[in-house]
Image (tube, rainbow, N blue to C red; front, side, top):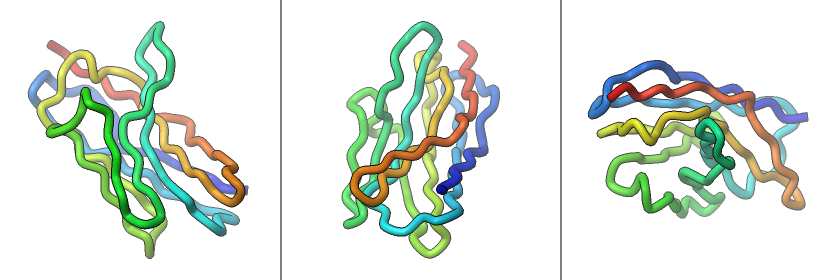
Length: 116
């Protein structure tokens, strides 16, 4: 099994910054991609950013220029640096790992609240 543990969420004022981290452990094996998703109250979960095994990154248009995702392959961790936060960035942020044969794993999430 694979465990993903997120950290770094919290309450921040609009315009502020937060850094989220996710540590993967367990029988990780092959990693095809790791990503961050978020779910705002009453809305569906959406992709925020993803980084593939080759190092390619992709982020949602709504966060481009503000959020940066990075990965430490040696430590099996990913981070999400979030700057210029807006109230619409509020939500639960989930770490995701796509492993062998597309198996997907999820963390329990960390809450980010941006006050306006």
